[in-house]
View 1: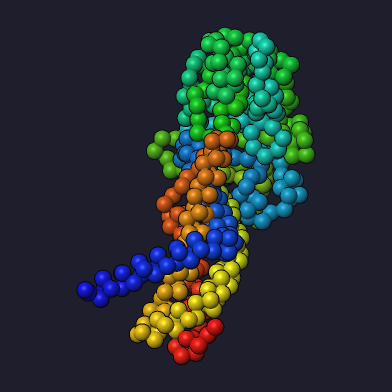
View 2: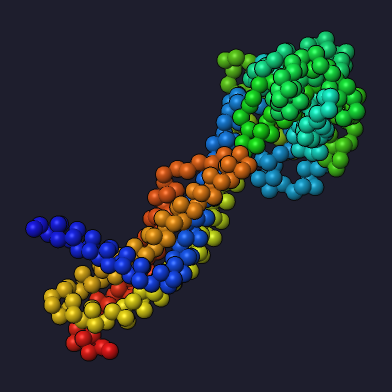
Length: 432
């Protein structure tokens, strides 16, 4: 028999002995691995939720197009750079004139759009009514006729409004797939041409925007309605009129001309906005230019902080579990002193005794790791089933949980295992 075969047989026998120990001390073993189970459960469960949201968010942002530039009063970029809230509040509101200046002066600009009700602030939220049905409260946007094109969205039914309808402020609307599903789809009604009520004002439905990826999988990206910004002003107010402490939420969407680099268009838009806001060279921008890359960079910072906090919290639970493993292994060594003495007396090497108890500790915590992986996966799948929140269960999260649990067993089992291997055979045989 080769040395490798002997070692493998020894490890298999030791693992079997470890499982026997677990079975003979069920309550003690369960309490010992509880901390490991909690730690691994939190690692796997939270990782599945964060990874799922990350994938969903990236799909949602990519649907806007990689080159789209958003101009807004302020956003996550300003907060992440350390600017105070009061400083951001003093920034001037954006306006239709800003969009028109970018459209008129931007030589690299291909398309622009004004979104009243989008961005930081208190967006108008209304229910849409049709017949005896109503939607949940959803966001209302005032836009130009270019909204669908600049969003790379697809019309499921009907059409968007025209430039003439925007100029004349017609009471027309295009609804997202969410309100269409709530008001029309369930009853098999064609929404085109139907009159709905948004708040207290009636609008004619011209079209339905197809489904779009939603961050978090909650369908929020489909719960909206758009109308001409001229019509929006009549119901919700002009962008120059204050709405809440931060003013009317406004965003300007800019798409570079075909063949023009996004960075070149950004520099041009920045220059136009600085001139309009009268900023000298020594003054910072009083607006934000946001791209999909910038949004993802902010999210990466947030998710990294969440994962770091998760690792710290899980480490505490694993530490508690590890201390329990050390205690249980110390008790086990004491209870099996005569057994250790017999094994040493008949020729077992100290290294084999050390490995035996380390394997037992690793098996003990690995069982906790397996239970933690199963519980974490179950929690993630249950959240997905109940709320629709996207989850992702990458293989490396399982490997990470099992690896952590086994490492905890080996680390905290080292002292009891070392004590067992250093016993004097004669004294061990005399132990009562």
